[in-house]
Image (cartoon, rainbow, N blue to C red; front, side, top):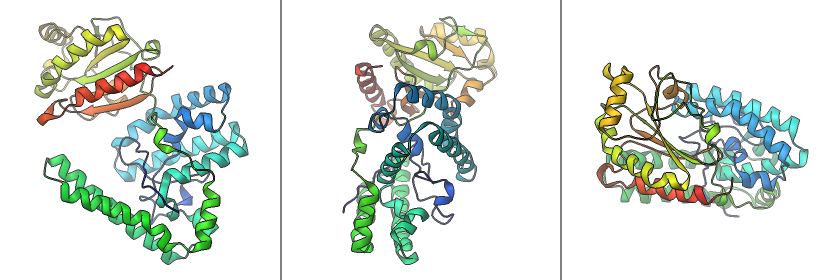
Length: 364
């Protein structure tokens, strides 16, 4: 039996509970090691198809997303001690919805796929440990390997963030993940491996899943819009929307302006809408007239929401200027980038353009 270390990453690193289980299915000791996968899975059309959800079920599920996706997205910026209680509460709502609106067969299959998505880390769950009669020493071995993988990847990410050479750290991170993966055969007894295979059910190709993020937060109404009447994301369904947060006196934001102009001029005929959200940092940026003048001087002709009270900044859980979010034709977040798009040779503008082309080709 072989596993691939696969994480459907929820924006930042979001961990814990699983399956039809609640948070208590993972002990406090291992809680930060077991990836939380239920919400990302439920957002994917491929899972809806696999579970044979009807149109009514999908509609009710999207109503649930409208309620929980805002807090879910905002939780990505919280420290773990504040993040986990929020996610636990959301999980409770999700499992309640599943109990009320899905069949036992659908829940069983969803549980199997979630185990597959959690990969080797599923073996740190208490409910699975009981079914496989894992010994405490076996779980501790898996936990030690998981911690080594986490540490190796953290070191790699830190080096990349600082722009330091990372070949050696990449090798170490890959080796740690491989060791964790290979440990399944080494640590589990033969009968435990057979029982695990039965519990996992038919393999599901998780690499096909693309829409794993929340619905984009709806714009908080603002008194001032520039270059447009007030817009909502709901009325823009059917179009790909590029939302960017900026402040007109922000030097790093200026570096992106030419790209925003290019997107607005070249992509709008394809069904792409660029929307700026000007959230102030300085006193001058709090003056709508100054925002309007600066937009005209910079030839920013796309719609601009003047976020004077920073309510949209808060709704999106935004943390820095500039940040660009890509929203698909159905209103779901699909990609984002923080900072200058071409910082130190980065080509994030091209990456976003490629994502946009893929989204334009998708059916609604």
